[in-house]
Every structure is written in structure tokens, then in C-alpha cells.
View 1 (cartoon, chains in turn orange, brown, yellow, blue):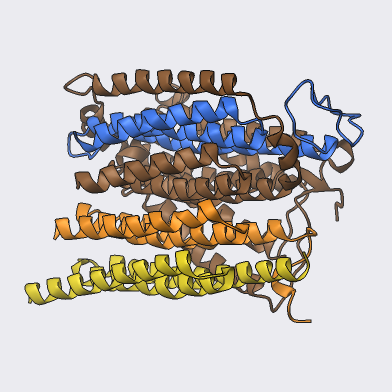
View 2 (view 1 turned 90 degrees about the vertical axis):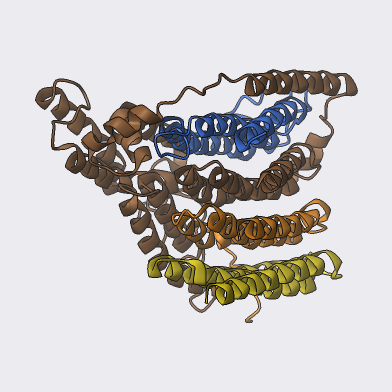
Length: 95
Length: 312
Length: 97
Length: 115
């Protein structure tokens, strides 16, 4: 099974690597943040697969930390991309 | 698994190259986020789960948010900077220098001594005396506790450095912009749902640190991130940095650490030595005292220099 | 029993890997930011969910199994929130350039 | 070729990449990024050395691993300080150039010496 998990981890990583092309090409910064978000999900999957292969239970804690902070960068992006510091983009389309 | 290692290594090198050569700064920063995530994977592969946890919390959360915010604020300076791009000669020399550094390090890696020098045996032999089960915690808080004390103080100094760049008019004020609260917005929603879970996870990571991978840095980082989430959603505001509770909270951890160190000097004959049988309780006290200070210092460092002078 | 569970793991993880493939294909091939967001949030969350589902029978402690489920729920939550926020920021950019 | 050697060589390449970026990129924020790449390369090298020191039931030598945790946290604080300085330079002068012969910045540079 170890080989299977290793192969699955490599496959997911390869998919994620292809997704990185979006970080390269953009065209908008939103696409880039999104691609990083994809990498986060794929990275957690690869981490768990590799973790099963090395049979270390604490890897679940690493995945938990990553999952908890997954949205943090995206929120920082949305906040920073807002034209005025106190405009909340989440409030924008309920006018 | 060599294939997995090699593919991760290649991916990291490709991302590192992207971070360095990308034209748009924002693209480079996003590349750096992905790079940090892959590093977490590498630490797992290198059997450093404690390090992976630190990288996941700091590299994945705090550094990413810090750099994304900075890149967005500096966006309008980018065009001017492109004109300053050095000429071909400088680039060639830089490439040569980089190659020389890489070659030298590669030679070092390939000629590392066999068998590898290691302190693992010494740590294993003496870990029982500290009564903690996680060797990393044993190193951080018993064998090399001076490093950890100085690190806590370095973090404080870095925060003072961040604060000291504030203009005189807003000294003592609140860091960062005021975020407007939209009570029904999705940002407020996640800032209400996530922090309770995050605080539990942070405390859990902190608490298991004595015997399993985890510890105060990782736990403090998670809790700091949760606090900043509520600030970004407008549910809470950053306190003015002149608040007394804030200043006390910042120095309480390092002061407790120093006090226990001095107690060791009296009771066990050396600064930061633990009297026999008291190692574990003292380590737990240090960690408990240090964790809130670390969470405060990390969150305030990310929030940056004071920007608003309202002291209400 | 062991073989059946192993088979379940292999099927679920392979299915998860397939959804990562689908998500990446969508991210690369779809024409604009919004459709790409759609591909990403559907496929990836399902991909991770299946990978975790496949790993569950192999976890020996209930606590670890619970953590893995929480990981999936957290990724679902933050994926939904992040894609909402990114889409709104993007729409604002397109309507008020 | 074991995992320590693979990631050790990977670390050597990363340090080289970072050094190149540190010299070539004119923007300070990019220099900070490049510096972080150098830093992570050094950390990775130490991680590879820690992995080689596996023994006594540990997957890696715990002493360098503990140093790495300290290092990662300190690297974050250094980055935060550098970013704070940079943002202040930007607020004060409207530009972030490090060049000594750049055109004068548009905003009055009364309290910051841009050179």
C-alpha cells in the first residue's frame, strides 16, 4: 500500500503543479490567489497521503493547521485589494 | 518514495525560481505561498513533524498574509522599479555568484561526514530527566532553553522595531486600518465560526507539545491568526499599542522565563537549570506564560506599525 | 475484510485523485475567473473528501479519524468563503475598474 | 541517493536562486522575498543534516530540528520588520526605490532620507 499512497501523492502533486501554471499566467491576481488556494487543498491531500505512508499520527495536526489557515491568505488578499481600507468587499453587492 | 521526494524537490526549485524571476510582484508573492506549503510537505518527508507544524502555521498563514498585504499596498511602485532593472553584466555576475554558492553548498552536501554526527543519542539518554516526551520540546525548553529565551526577546525587539517606524503623530495608536463590520457578510460569518475552532486547535497543539509534535510557537501562531481574522472582519479592533495590559502581556512571558531561570541559579546552581524533579512543572509554567505573550507579539507584528491615533 | 477495506481505500483515493485532475483541468481550461472558481471549489473539495474517506479505514484511533473529518469540513468552509470573497473582489474590479 | 541528499541538493539550488534574486531584483519587496528563499534554503540544508542524524529512535536529530523552529519564527519577525520599514518608506516618500541616483520622489521627503 505504501507504494500506492506514494504514487497517489505524486499524482496529486503533479495536478497541483499543473495548476501552478495559473499562478504564472494569471491573468488577474484573483486567478493567482485561487490557484494558491487549489494548491492548499491539493497540498493537504498530498500531505495526508504521504503521512499515511510514513504512519505518523501527528501529521493530522499539520493538516488541521493548514486547513484552519487555508482561507487566511485569501482574506488578506481581498482586504488588501479593496480600494479603500475600510470598504468591505463582502458587503458590496447587497445594495 | 524516492520518486515522491524528487518530484517535491523539483517542484520547490521551480517555485523558488518563479518567486525570484516573476515579472509581477504579486505573482511572485502567490508563488511564495505555494512554496511555503510545499516546504511543509518536505519537513514531513524529513521526519520533522514539529518543523512542519511551525511551517504550516507561520509560512502558510502569517507570512503569506503579511506579504500579500504589502504587495497590494506597493502595487503602484512597480512600474518605476522595472526601469531600475540591472543590465546584462550585473545579471551575469549575479548568476555566476549564485552558481558558485550553489556549487559550494552542493559539494558540502555530497561530502558530509559518514557516519553523520548526531546529538540524537544524547537527547534520548537525557530526555527522561526533563520528564517531557517530545524531544524537540526537551531541546527547546531544557537543553537549549537559553536559545528559546533569547528568541522570545528577539521577537519583542522586532516588534519594538516595527512600532518605532510609526510617525510621531500616531505613536501609541492603533495598528492597521479600521475595518468596517458588515454583520451579515460572509467575512463576519467566517470570523465568527472559525476562531472558536481555531482556539481549540491552538490550545490542543500547545498542550500536546510536551509529548507529541506541537508546542507554544505553533499554538500561539494559530491563535494570533484567529485574532487577526476577527480584526479583518471588523468584529474587533486592534488595541492602541500604548495600552498597559498589552505592554504587560507582551513582557510577562519572557519575564516569567527569566524569573524561572534565576530561580534555577539559586536552587540548582546555574541560570535556567531545573532542580531535580521539578523540570516538567517548570517547563509547563514557562510554556503557559510564554504562549499568550507569543500570540500577542506575533499578531501585533503582522498588524504592523500604528496608523491611527484614536486612543479611545 | 482487510482486502475489502484496502480495495475501498484504493477506489476512494483514486477517485479523489481523479477529481484533482478535473479541478486542475477546469482551472487551466475554463475561460474566465468565475468559471475557474467554480471548477476549483467543486472538484477540489470532492477530491480531498474522497482521499480522506479512503484513508479513514486505515486510521487506528478515533481521534485521528475525527481530526481528518474536521480537516475536510474546514477546507470546505474556507474554500466556500474564499471563493465567495475572491469572486466578489473580482466582480468589483470588473464593474468599477 | 537518499532523502537527505535530495533535499540537501535542493537546498543548495534554493540558496543560489535566492542570492541571484537578492542581487538582481531592484524592488525591496522582491529582495525580501529572495531573502526568504535564501533563508528557507539554509533551513532546508539544516533539515537535511538533521535527517542524516537520525538515531536513537528519532527520525531526525532533534537538536537541529529545534533550532529550525526557532529559526522559522525569527525569520518571520525579520520579514515583518523589513515589511514595516518598507511600507513606512513608501508612505513617507511615495516610492520604494533603493537607488541613489533615482529621480526625486513626488511627495516631499522631509522626514525620511530616501538615499
